[in-house]
Image 1 (cartoon, helix red, strand yellow):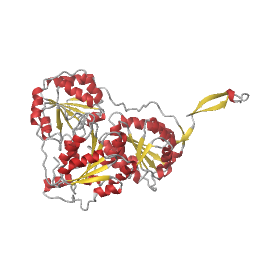
Image 2 (cartoon, one colour):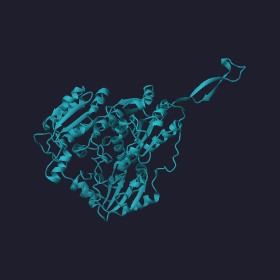
Image 3 (cartoon, one colour):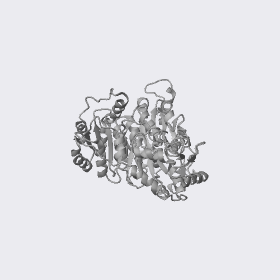
Image 4 (cartoon, one colour):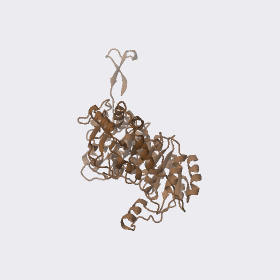
Length: 560
């Protein structure tokens, strides 16, 4: 938008008689797209260029937006995921058409399952060629329809301002999620009028924020009448930024708290009301607490099979209050007696104004007595559980731990202490191996002054080790903890339990990971037993720049 001088009439043509008229100048659509990103407060994007997105990249080059060049497109989505979860903003990733777009699919699905707000920009072949199977054409909107919150194939460049405004609004409101915008090559080159909408009006899309007072009164009455109430916190608490409200609710009511894997970090693990993580890989005493409760308040939890142990740990005579911003999740898996639809943070604020303290002293003492003492076995290898606990003790109160998927995920989740200000991230819904390293890159870029630790097994690490190039090029000061048992440990453990033997889980001829890191200019150290852990972690945490700690783990080490 510019102001340009125009003469007011044919007689008065000197500079003294100019007036200024507000006019809107046409710009290339690709340039407008970058301006839209700037209007949304985007300062960092993750991507990989290609032929059908080059016009957007040329506009990016001229802008103040930081572009992080990943080494494979799937990492761009995971990086944007980690960035979004730490920054609180909507993450943005970019790729070209065809294989560039399809490489994003796993990352998009990962964000969808964990409700992470992303805007995904993909290049597309020219509009006139769509549907003709030309070079690098893929129906990415069709391919991602089932695991995007919404997607757009742009057919008219004039619609771009509305589409971008709606995309960011949809991604970040209600239950967050990824939104994809597919940009045909010719659309990027058209001239459009740059005018970004200030408001959004989408017919049929009005997420509920405030909880219904009638339902809140019903929930409070049920809580008052219960004898063994329990809060079950899910990932929705973290997504809503409702940790403080949850602590206040627990303290005002006296109700103890368990959490799912994605709910880790929603409630401090050093709080006297904290019980532990539930689920198939949670703590036995926490699962038992759910079985003993007569009322459970699900807060931002999907009640998924793995995270909440399915319905097996829920007794039939239990009263269930379910709070969630997505009405589709309430009653989908578990029957709900009192549904409460709305933003978790807002509903907890409403309930905190009305909740009355219950006498839960005996109930809390019962749950405390069930919690076992933690003892760490020692041997000829590194005990990964002890390693995570030791590392947790050495990290700052604002540290971020990003776990990959597999045994390492639960070693980290079970033994990293949740303190106020800390953050734990992993792929819970999709269980995506290779997520940890690129997500940690995004997290560190979003919070450069915070300690960020990426935890991975040797299987998951090799699914994204090419991002060592991204780390080295950008000098991203991550600490990488690699648990090497030369196996796909969780699958091996499952096979042994189910069949008494294993198949195709041995990772033969693993590389020398420390040497591999050094090939990228990244320092590292190999730790062979517990006695070497403390010195290795101190070296890693004091090192300026990225650092790899490879821990040699017994292949028979159990997950739990």
